[in-house]
Length: 419
Image (cartoon, rainbow, N blue to C red; front, side, top):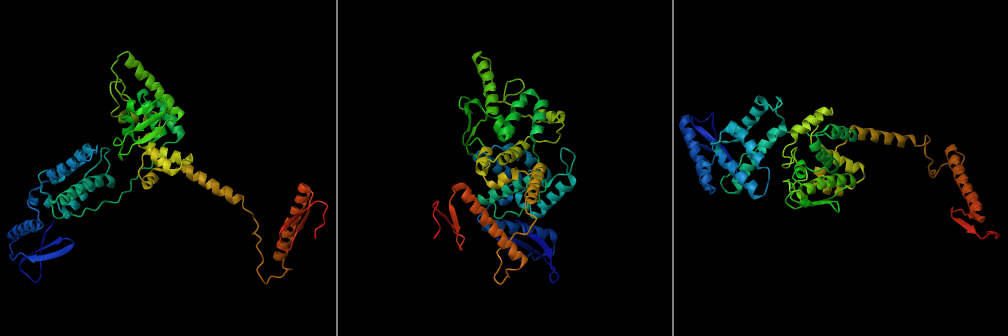
């Protein structure tokens, strides 16, 4: 909640104004002293919060609010608590951990956005993109929403998101995938092949364990709760993936027979001591060797979505294979490439080239004269079609064919004259 002090031309006193339940209120402090006016405004704020049944809202700090968000994440089984902790550091640096949330007003949030846009840079020494700042604002917004839901705060400040213009559009063509596979480090080659064919999220692939894999029937089963959308799904492996998985399985079972300690994960690190936890370095080096700088592992999801569509897989099936919950999310991943645009242009060109150069002959409207060229052409064409039909019937059936005035065709028995 934000109470603003201001002066009126017709009064020597400071006045207060605030918005509550979408209604604007004004009240005089009855003092011309700014210091006293601020104390009166603070007391008024506490009174309003207490009237709404909220006591102690002015004692809640930003740190307390972030802790509530973390608790909510853990209670709902969300795995990205580390992201909350990472983004909260940025909020702490600007607002301060012990800052009371009632003082994080809309004006303060606007100053935060301005600071991030003009004073801060990314790890690449580039200006921050709106999407980065929006993710931080969403954390702040979620925190205030929880405070209101739990009746610890009367009113949350309005937080407007920035317009984002950095939508990812990367994907890999098949030749790029093959080149990348040639140059990749040996231990990440199976992961690259798997992601290219499946389009799974990287984390889903890296945490895949052998108890989820049916190597005999070629089925991988993800249990409910193990995926981002909490829904389980099945993947029926094509031959290329099944052959690779069975090779990895053979190596795994060989170590188990020899009682060599080996992790339960399908894709293991370079030393085969644990799963691959972070392959960003190996990925970056592999892309550099292949001349594909700037490619992202997440490009595999966009690539797979597009490949499913190109292969004629129904959208609903493709959504299920990729683990997309809605068609709107799937459409973001079904990226159109330059090749798609070229193919589209070629198809239109081929269609137009097959069109007749002559204007189609239409039935002459009532009132046309039989001697008019267009009508005469129409009648001649009609007669020609009828004649071809007669000849075709005689050739195929040897029957006598009669076409009436209503254009109905009668095939008579051979040797009998039409009546």
